[in-house]
Length: 227
Ligand code: FES
View 1 (tube, helix red, strand yellow):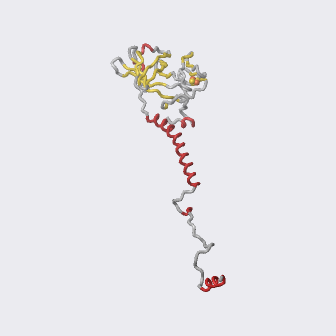
View 2: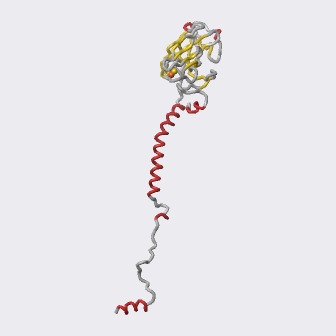
View 3: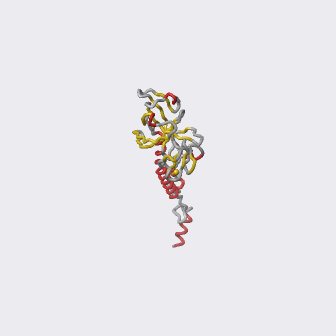
């Protein structure tokens, strides 16, 4: 009987039924462009996480820098008194209160026959208040010292003392002299001295936009400070 069964298969032609070893065409998901492997998934997570962390670090930094840059700081002119308070040949120290920017600061007014300097008492190292010391100025914090016109003579300050713009007006408001306009020979005791916007200087006393304490105005390091 068994022989007949085998014989039927042979006699009926080629067997076309399922075979145990028939190759099954499997679908390879790797060929599907939309298929996400575990490696791809983890790479994506890592990139996204890195992006978020980078943004978390950079956004506040950039925001801080840009905010400082675009902040249009206003320096109002502040009347600091009649010229009789600033004798020729002397350096006077005077407190200055201002609303914008809100500040209580001190200015050193150094007056000569044909020149006048208005120096800020903020140490250019880390901002401590400097005081007069002999003909110059000294900082109590880290030994910074400046000569009579504010150039650094000792210690860590990166640049000379910052200065204020100034102008002198008659009691009626007419301008008599200014930092850029001269005219000191015509000044009278009743005329009034006003100081305005602060600015910074390099070692040669060339003028630059105001920098913060510790910021150099020239050299490679100055590029690290955007404003
Ligand atoms: S803050 Fe003036 S020397 Fe450091």
